[in-house]
Amino acid sequence: MKKFSNLLIWTLVLFALSCVKDDDFGVPNILTEDPEIPSENIITFKAIKSLYEQAVNGGNTTAMIEGEVYIEGYVVSSDKGGNFFEELIIQNKIDDSNPDNDPRLGFKIDINQSSLSDTYQFGQKVLVKLEGLTIGETSGVLTIGRGNGTEVQQIQPSEYRDIVLRTNTIAEIQPKIVEPQELTEADENTLVQLNNMQLNRFELGATFASESFDEFDGFRLMESCDSGVQIIMQTSTFSDFKSLIVPQGKGSMIGVYSRDFRDDFNVILLNSSSDLKLDNEERCDPLEFSCGIASTFGAENLFFEDFESQRNNRPIEGNGWTNYIETGSEAWEAWSSTSTNASLGRSCRFQSGSSGDLSNIGWLITPEIDLDAQDGETLRFKTSNSRADSSYMEVFFADDWDGTEEGVITASWQILTDAYVVKDSDSFVEWLPSGNVDLSCLSGTIHIAFKYTGGGQDSFDGLYELDDVSIDYTP
Image (cartoon, rainbow, N blue to C red):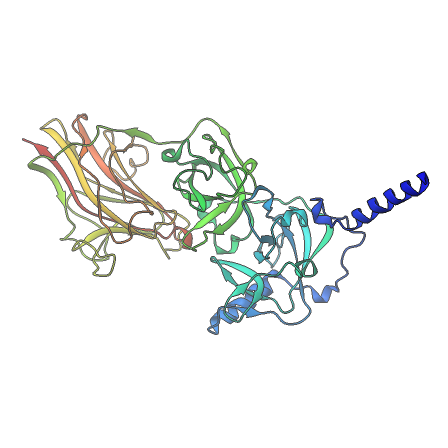
């Protein structure tokens, strides 16, 4: 009877184990053999991207893939930290040490299944069976999935293992080291590394994604200490590191280059908080200065510009202005429009989109202002923008600029922190006042500068507008 009981117990144990699937343990089964796919059936990422581009040129939004063809790629996303959901991001290269005719490209694979990292590890080489699948765009990035002719839909749980085939190879992925202004659409869905980055000074102390205003994702503004160009780090409010404070030093960040859910701007998606290594405590913030905001502005005027006398679409000139191009080919120019984002009569703007420049930095600097000749000086102006993306505008003053273009970079410019400049989150059509920025605690002769930083890539194509610049005083 005792032997029978032991036999029964072992039978029940073996039966129970046989009912447990591999992903219930959180570790995939080790394959004994890789899938055997004839080499002639494996095509390039570039070929699939070209198929989609041909469909778009023909007036379609998606393209169905026909024939028994596969792509071979490497997983660069992981939902283990909760920052990716029901998707795999795969790219075609593990590094860029052996460049060839096929550039580093990536695709998102849309799968109606969570905990995909239990089956597909980061760096795992996979073969994707493409027959009958569709390629198109979701949230602005190239995506492979099922389709209905006009949009890409999710691959279902019952089929994804037969479509995305694992291999035994777990590769060490080398992220592409790049400057933020050099990122292009071709880098989307690939792993990138940005060095010498820091969290914008106005967001210090913020968590990754658990502030009161973080609805579905947290968006944190990261900036390059080398170029000043900014890019947004996106973190899901479902991630397991959402409540951690973003490190406040400078360093590197590694993540997947992508677009936000609404396809409004480019973002970096981390796989885990450890991919953000900001361990250098020496930040690169500019000098800041504040006299506060004055309750009123004086009745007398030292300097005024409404740009009405300027010529449309021509660089700003005259009235003592210095219109200096630090990098790129664009300058501050006059502009007028009656569209939904209308100008105030004629205004001044800086637009870098489609310039073809990797970087655009432009300064619009006032003539010298003598602050010792009167009292109660204030500065006021208005700003508006359109799709600021990762471009931005700042307001500085310096008391040591020598008035030459060569001296702009070496002068000791300080940010007037009290001056309000429109943000990308502000209303699209509004012209917003700076406030009455108090200058009365300064002395000597100063210049005030409006500085634009951006680039000619699609993700840095912001447009900033400026008008009604006035420096007043109390007699």
